Length: 375
Image (cartoon, rainbow, N blue to C red; front, side, top):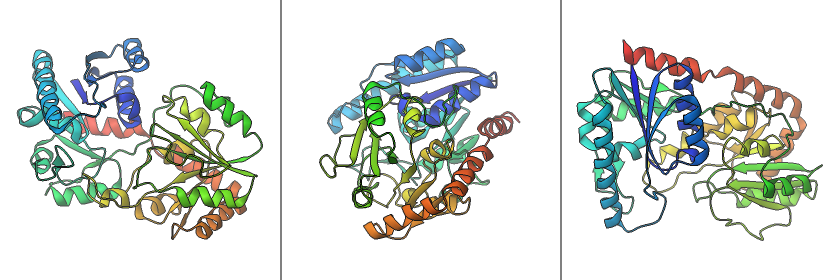
């Protein structure tokens, strides 16, 4: 069996995709990665592992008008199929990473064998979020797929119902692939981040890593940490703009650090932060309620306890597994109470976080998905 993996946009920013790529390679499967704007580090990993790469330079993350987006999509679609048609045969399957790759591949995909791996929970695939009535019938593709993958248990059941699937999608958690050892309280390679982390030695770092958006509110968390005093510091790692600049004297912002080196910062955290609220975007509001953040695994691999708001996707993981505390409201007092509860039970929560991390075997799950696809 040969696999063609299709991922649109820089794959370095999608740890779940990198995890699948490396794990499939570990399983000895013949892989070709079709992607856009590949970074040099990922290209080097693929070369060293013998993974074939077909890359299209598209400047995909550059903001452009709706018309130019449509033109870019059609150009990429033609480029993708020209390359795929050259290598696809009866022994080949396509692994489609997310609705973004799905809409670029289009209806011709229905003629092929493919696995549909969704990163987000959405009933339909919208081509452009400002024109939501122009969409792709995701149900048709999901029913045609050899296997469908979701990152979280509730998402699997919701999508099964939405798309009238005969069987439950596979649940493949967003656990990152770690191929080099990082110790707790590791030194930090990134120069800018190293300066900040060294400056914060001896403080309790409350860390958030991820995108900055209305769906991930952090203002009350930053203010809560500020109220707790100079013993604490709130740190953000994000590829986004520093929208909280000057909000607090013990708040620090670190620009995007290429995986897995951002984990060197994670290893120095005292508590990890998770924050999700439903918002209006191209995905269902259920997407936030049943979130599946890879940072849960990034925190827990170091035994870092977590705090988050009380939604099913977080409370089920944190409180059921005993590795964190959820607060009911985004209010400073509630958040401070959650932090203090973590402190009062720190050793137990830290141990449970490590145990949670060790429970998930991504290689075993991907092998199960592939065995099913080949049967």
